[in-house]
Length: 337
Image 1 (spheres, rainbow, N blue to C red):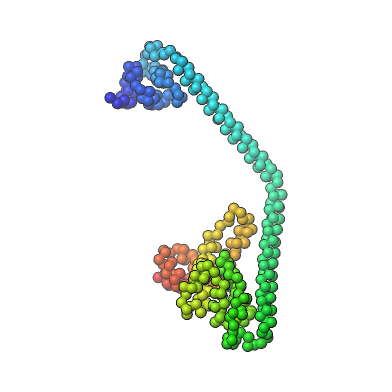
Image 2: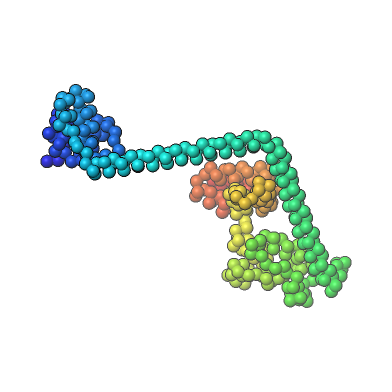
């Protein structure tokens, strides 16, 4: 017959307690809130229960006399193990307490030193940021100077064949030998397509390349994904520079929406300083604005309002708005309706 705890509690007796298994006696002890160690023997737990019931006046004190057991060798061994285990637990607790106190002491020491040297650290951080900004500025100036010198050398090479002062230069495309100009096309950079395109267009303007030859010239250095995209264009589209440029930039996601997402989603990395993070964040914002041809306060205002409007509508309407490419809040609202 299964053990019924409620029945025992309602009418406890020594006889029924003697008939219980250890697991059942443990349930009784826990019910009465009696504490004991995990390794405590069954007889000892039973005695704790009897003592509790005697103290509560449920059973007579005489039951304790018959419940006295003579400790065996196993009892002493278990008691010894219990004492050793408790000792080990206390030692571990003491060790953890010492470690906690040591950490707190070190933390207090760091705080004390931090307060004492806070002004100095702030000054050092300010100087570090100023140095980094100066280094970044010098790097940009150096890169810009190198780019100008490179373009100037290319222009000099071109002007060695034809004179820049000749008003007919670049206007007559008859006899334009593409093969002679391919060598001036900058190296394609898959990791910085925008820079490559800007560089190419600068050279095209400076060297007076006929506009209808730009698509042939720019594709000469394509590699990887750009080469695949160009090959997929129709013959008619592949001869149109603007369509080639659009296809390449879209392939590398260098379109206004991509710039917007880069600006919004860009986060500081663990290896970046805040100065570097701010610089990159600003670059993404400038590229977004440039891709949307933002040049006045009103166009910037419309850019922010349209973005916020799109954020507040459902995905279907947002997709419809993006397909129609409206940049004015009033136009966007009319399209949404």
